Image (tube, rainbow, N blue to C red; front, side):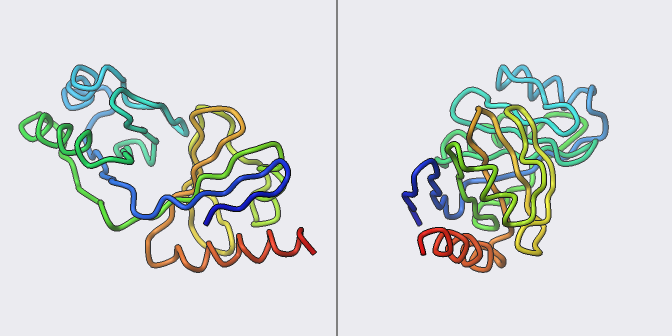
Length: 170
C-alpha cells in the first residue's frame, strides 16, 4: 500500500526480518556483546535507535529489545555473532510481524484518527492501541513512524488505514 495524499505517505513493509533480544540484565554481558557487535547500545526504556547495517532497535520491556531489518543478512549476522553470548539469546520472529511506515506532515493526524493520541517522537518506541489492536509504534527520525503489528492483525490495521485515507479523499 503506497498512498499519496498531500503531506502523508503510507508504505507497507510486509514481513520485515525481525528478532527479539532477550536478556537477564539491561547492562549485563549480553547487552555489552550487542553493543560491541553492532556499535549500538541497547535502547533505554521507551526508546528506538537505528544501528549499523540497517538494523533498528526498539525497547519492548526491561529485558527485551526488538530488532528489525529490511534485509535478511544483517539480522542473520547478528544472530550468528550473538549465538554464544552469555546472559541472553535471540528469538527469530521473521515472518511473524508486518509493518507500516507512515511519514509526512499529516502523520500525527492519521495516527490520532487510528487511536493514538501522542505519536512517538524521533528516538521513541512504545506500544499503542490502533484500530483496536496492539501495535508497536517506533520512530528513529522526525516525521516518520513505523507501526509494527503481529502478522495476523496486519490486514485489519491496513484496512483501517485505507478506510481513513478514503474518508479524507472524499
